[in-house]
Length: 106
Image (cartoon, rainbow, N blue to C red; front, side, top):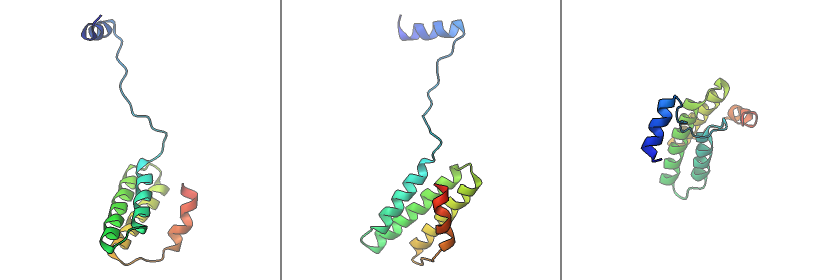
């Protein structure tokens, strides 16, 4: 039986074809990407590359916050985005409070 015939027979009987879903295990993929961008920023050789990498990390943290369902993590990711943008502007601030929250969220 050819493919179009099989599909029409399946539809005529009332069965539907399975939809294609991507597999997810409940983890936000943008978190790992943002962490990798931060690592890239810390190991950048010159100021321009460092600034671009921090801006990219900020953008990825913002995406992670947008896709997060847990309010506590969403706030943490938004704070990380703001911190990365602060580093990109060249004025790093010591945020011990944000660093203290980090171990319990992962």
